[in-house]
Length: 248
Image 1: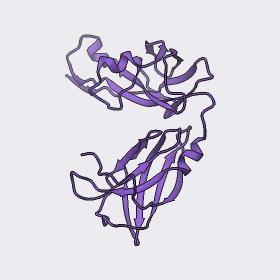
Image 2: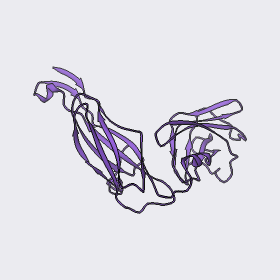
Image 3: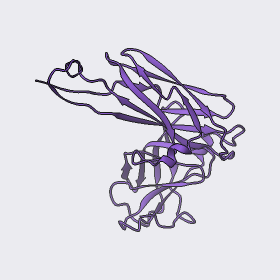
Image 4: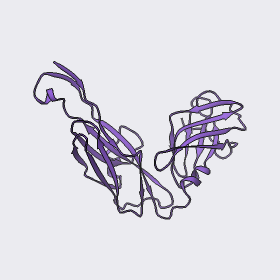
């Protein structure tokens, strides 16, 4: 009796996809770093959540992806072609969607040959963001980052403040770390996140910063179009119009 575990080997080149509206299509490369073939399915959706996702998420994704399902041999690559389907999307800011890749590894050789074996086989789902960028979009990634506003707001559920970032710009900003430094103390959040144009995101920083912090510095790492983490700092703003409680 044999026992084995099937693992994922197919990887997506890059950590995000930038789709300029001026382009007819964009390409994404997948590579199988393993020795054995794998069956791969790809699709786009709107859902921010890993699961569950609804059929509506799939129906509303305005991208055609070819090929949608394919076999990729070991040590080989496959190029995907993404084409925007022409749906109406906001033209004054970026829109975000998700590329999903589902990999089904092959059965171990013994199982494929009919031999008695025990093995665990997982279908691995990987997701990366697709940023659709309209032509003539005002500002830039840099100006959007510079315009972010950071405040402490009360958390109605837990009773301690959370760090809120508000984005008046036109680009999404993704983070892999944020940290509030105030009165010589550090209050980090290590899980990252993203703030949409015209929106805000709350970070439940560790520790218990005073609810009446009047000054401080926010240190954060934001991600460029190429996925590079860039260090930046910004002053903590005195909460005003953004000071409504965080949603529970």
